[in-house]
Amino acid sequence: MGEHVIATQDELSNGDRKLVEVEGREIAVFHVNGEYHAYTNWCAHQAGPVCEGKLTGTSDADFDRDSLTVELDWCKEGEVLNCPWHGWEYDVTDGTCLSKEKVQLPSHSIKVENGEVILTL
Amino acid sequence: MSETAQHATSETTVIDTDVHITVEEETVAEYMDEPYRSSITESPHPIFPSSSWDQRMGGKIDDHFSTFTSPDDLLAFQKEFDIEYPIINTFEPLGKFSQPDLAVNLMQAYNDLLFDRFLDDHDFLGLASIATQKPHKAAEELDRVGDEDQIVGVYVGTSGEYPPLGDPEYDVIFQAAEDNDLPMVYHGNGDEFLFDFPMHNKGFNNYFEVQTLGHPWQQMATMSSLIGEGVPEKFPDLDFIFLEAGIGWVPYMMHRMNKIYHMRRSEVPLLEKSPEEYIRDSFYFGSQPLGEPNNPADMKRIVETIGADNLMFATDYPHWDFDHVEELDKYLRNYFTEDERKKVLYETPVKAFNLPL
Image (tube, rainbow over all chains, first blue to last red; front, side):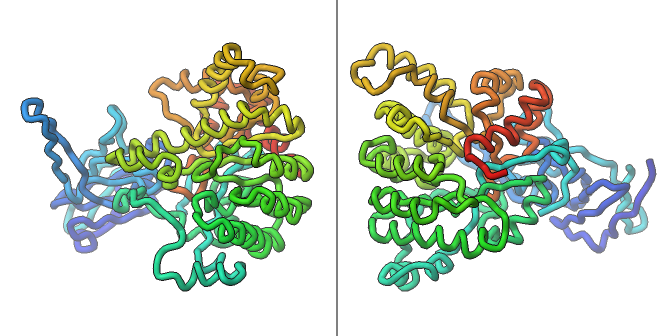
């Protein structure tokens, strides 16, 4: 258990990430809309390198039973982390899996002090 | 490829029964004769047919496929996945080609390329591709390449093949395969769904529906044709291997064909035992893509039903729906004995492919 400076604020523009190895574990920190989120690089599906996947949006849909129409919405642009192995989607802002309940990326505490991004592990 | 944690298979010898080599069209053209070579290199239209489905969902899934082209790529894959023996194939399903002579020339070119670029200078194991449009040409090809020790099976895509793959028209292929001690290896395909099921391909609105059905429909059609035409009875020393449709369809087909056989035996008088017996005696199944039941015990029952004597591990690397070794091994380690696990990962494929190990 300890604190590790893994990046500076200047390194990470909005939408950027940095993959580091800390105490033998691969961990990525993501900068999303002024907030920082850190996860272990390990997909809950087949242990793929999830933190190396694309950040995209995703589709949402609503069905109106009266008009029998489906309204599609491309949403969460830049907030969906896709595992590059099989496309499992995770919300990068909280690590939750979009296709399976109770599945969560292993997350880590991040704070910013004096321009430094600090991971607690 | 990224670093992954060492897993339990690092201490177990693992045979991967389905590894695809990517061959660029221009590369295979180098091994072709004219006028077919120019059909590949000079045509203004794509000769290699493809559907328009976006399999990688706009890049949500990485493209491992197009860069997996050399022996060095195979060696790196072996190291990362702890695979001692990848059984490689040149992937492209040849049944989809409209021009029979072009398909036959491609068949020879893929096999020449396999030797020249992968087998001659490495100890890999590989499958001989055949084009079934001209069965006697496929049989001649098996006689040409089949006695090489590194060739361990006959690779047939189960998409676009016509008539269905148990038809007596193919007996000359079965005969050549049996004479060369090679199993028939049938491989399902997703993108090529349009050749077998064009109406459904056009009718479905997303690839979810196509991928769900493509591989198992193709493999079910092939298995039904093989059993219904009595192929295992006509060629008792021939084995049949099915790749890339997972395994859940297998118990269903065994039991359903048993039922129909008892009702309609007189239609299939070549058969002297139940379909299930033929399947247990001479049919083998690659695990990928393994289904993902919400309750793991459901997979235990499927694996038990098929049994370790007929089940083999496969990754399907580098395709985008490949399985990591752990995907199957987590069930093998938790639910089965070490002897059963070793059968699935090593001994059963050694038997099915008559491997020189």
